[in-house]
Structures are given as C-alpha cells and as structure tokens.
Length: 254
Image 1 (cartoon, rainbow, N blue to C red):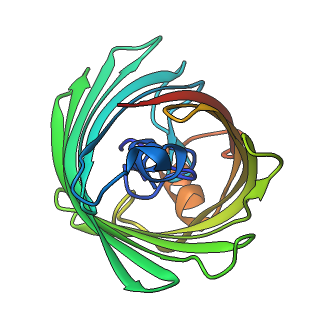
Image 2 (cartoon, rainbow, N blue to C red; image 1 turned 180 degrees about the vertical axis):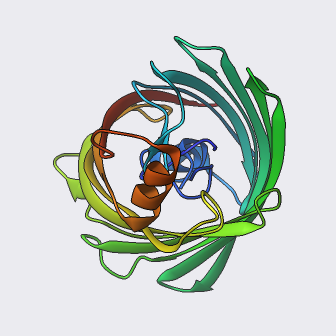
C-alpha cells in the first residue's frame, strides 16, 4: 500500500484523490504568490487526516484512520518531499521520501516523472520502491483529465488511473472540485487478475485563508470492480467491498 496523496489523489503517492500530492498542490496552486522568481525555493508543510486509509479501492487498515505529515521543497519544477503517516487505532507507521519533476510538454500539457522510497512499520516490516508518472491536460478550466501510472519494484506490477476533475471557483477563496476516476491493476495490488480495479468519485473543497495558508477537505466513494472482487473471493472476504471515506488537510507555505 501507500500514501494516496491527491487532489485528487496511489496505493501510493502518485495516484491519489485528495492528497497528485498535497505537497505539490500546496506549492503550485495554493500559494502561487510565493513563487516570485524561477530560482526561489518554496517550502511547504501539510498535515492530513483521513478516517480510513483507502488506496486502489482497498482499506489498508483493519480499523480506524490515519494522519499524515508532509514536508516538501520545490525549486524550478523539481519537488523533494518526505512523508510520515501513523494510524490512529492500529499499529502502523509509514515513511515515504521521493523526488518529482514536472515537464512542460506544451502550453496546455504537463507531465511528471518521479521516484519514491517506501518504508512500512507495523505487525510486519516491509519496504518498496516506486517509479511514477502522470500527464495532465489543462486546456479547459472546468474539465481537467489526468492519467497516473505507478510501478512498484517489489510487486513487479503497475497501476494506471484515469481521472477527470472539474474545478469550480465559487469565489476568490473557495474552490469545489467534483471528480471521477477509474483504476486498472496489472500485478500491482493483486497477482491473480489484470484489468479493471475500481471506480471512484467524490467532491473536494479548498479554502484559501491567506497567501500561505490553505484548508482542504474531501469525501470519496469507491466502487469495487473485478480485480478487487476476485481478490476478496480468494481471501474469503464477505460483505460489501465498496468504500466511503473522508479527510481534512491544512497546508502552510514558507
């Protein structure tokens, strides 16, 4: 598993909702006034809590939610970040650290390339390496399609997410963004099935208190598809496989 840090949002950091990265969002969208020159580094700190730890349509914890702290530094399209997450009801801690670089392919098209190291501490100890990328079309203010790709070395598999976001600026401080996404698993979350994994939709809200302080929240619902259903059947899991979860975040820029 991993940190789903999106405005959407990765079993890991590259494919999220709510949190592409809150760190990246806070540096590029929430605090544009900080970028006075192309050579000035921007620093951000994000605190996040979600009532469930959902990634790739799966709940990664037996019960409870998870809190995250994210520190990031951005300079000339390169972001370095460190993330720590801790469950609030079970024994689980996660550390992520990585780099992400943005490529401006065209006036309306941006791509990202990145790597992150993952360390997991709980009842079992594990680690992983992930290589991730994304491509975003920004030609329409009200409709933003995004494709995310993540490859995990331990699983030797990859995960692809197709998403569409529709940001609506209610006023100069408040933005509401409904979204829908479709996930495809190819040996990343499970080995038995390749193909459709889940569909997810939700609503995100961002409120800009000041040039360097932002509050965000979301509510999301994930619908299990064939990959999750086959894995649940193999594990003998009963009951609904769909997931509903919500979260809040605060972001500071320095």
